[in-house]
Length: 192
Image (cartoon, rainbow, N blue to C red; front, top):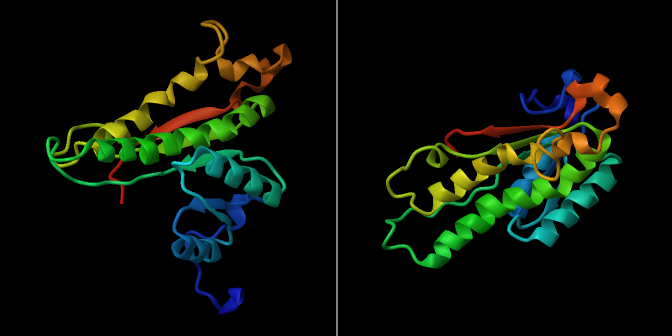
């Protein structure tokens, strides 16, 4: 269907996006390509549990888009319900690899550029299971709790108590631009 005859989508970039370019990364090719078409987005297939694959995908997308990532929203998630004593250790490891490290790898791939530019936003989507224990999600809950953990540490890591890391790369004249420094948000809700 030609773009002009498609019904409007609440997700398709519109006039309020002011030149924003959307990029998507997922491991499932078919659903990723369908979403990329619907959203007019660039896309790459990558397993977020593979640091090199995530970094490569982000680098390729930044090159394709002709600009660095200004806003990163991560929503990596994999869940395998089960009782604590019934699940093998590998399930706990897999949850951490995908849910936590999949988020961490993406954050660490874009954060240095944001610090260098003095602006950017990081959003990590967690889950209600990361806030309170939910019966049957003994491997998923701790991994989603871990996603929430780093939300304050990027402001402190690498800097001093008086000068956090986000401001360490900025010059003294940047005090006038405080509102443009990178920000970190953690979001919790029921993951779908």
